[in-house]
Length: 206
Image 1 (tube, helix red, strand yellow):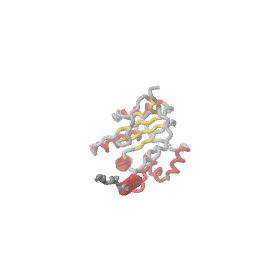
Image 2: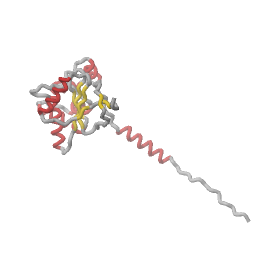
Image 3: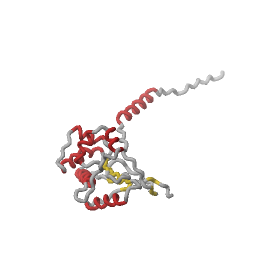
Image 4: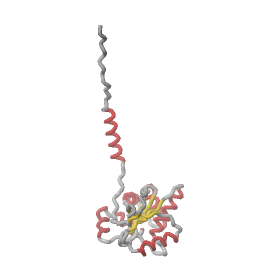
């Protein structure tokens, strides 16, 4: 008598729970991700043969567009408000909770600290119009009290107090006058701030 082979049945895996989990994770990341604010400056950086990417965390940045004005940004968000308060204390200027919250949102700024309260009261569109019209004066860099360097100095001091470190990046337009770059480097050296990285565009050795 022939032996009857049992019919094989394929393994069935219900993927519904997995797809539900995937959608839950996707929803979570969409709701919790904080997107980096867009840069307000249009800077054409010089090229180099270095392909090393620079990090955005643990850094601060000085930007110099073609007009030679200085802008500052604290890219490490946890230090933005403490840095604002430290600079405010240095210049006897107090910032309320609304101004502190607004400072956390801006990507970079280019006004003296004496004008910062007014700048923070503007809407994003008003700031953009001010930038396009050339109404942003830039952060002062005179030799007597260079505010642009004081932002860097106070930021590094703040990080050291928390057993941390902040890396300085300098992003300059390739058409900016050499004197503006030299002036910045001189002011940094006056405060023994000699470590920084220049932001360039990779040019594959051309």
